[in-house]
Image (cartoon, rainbow, N blue to C red; front, side):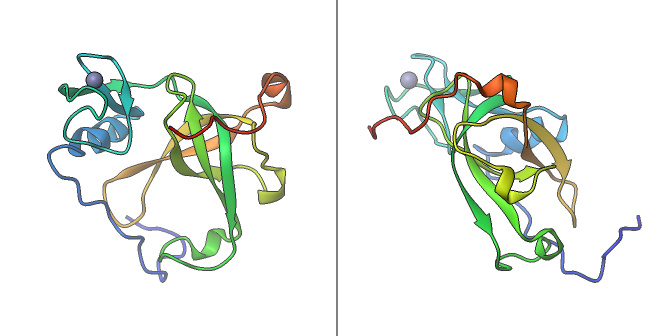
Length: 158
Ligand SMILES: [Zn+2]
């Protein structure tokens, strides 16, 4: 396998445990799935052992892959090997359409950082993580027309 820029150190690799392994297995198949309580149907992220609302058993279910930017930052400094050449880039907290209380942190692709806005609509893309066999979710901005009714600001905590 050849890769441009291979002189750069590869990024850190995930270290799945039994609870997070299905998350990475879904990504390997090109699917974004997170935990959902099989009793009360609450979505859960990050990975937990049991439902934080009712203590029920968790399973993995697919998300549609679209969501809204809740917040974001622009990464100017090199904080992890493997992403140096991409700087500056935006990392967003994305609220998936199915789960208003969930925030997925991921890089924004195919857009300059100054094009990124809170409330913008995004769609997931699943890309290879250099240095191994894992895949990662990233988000691309959807056309402005799709975000005309986006709500600014977030939900109150809790
Ligand atoms: Zn539950």
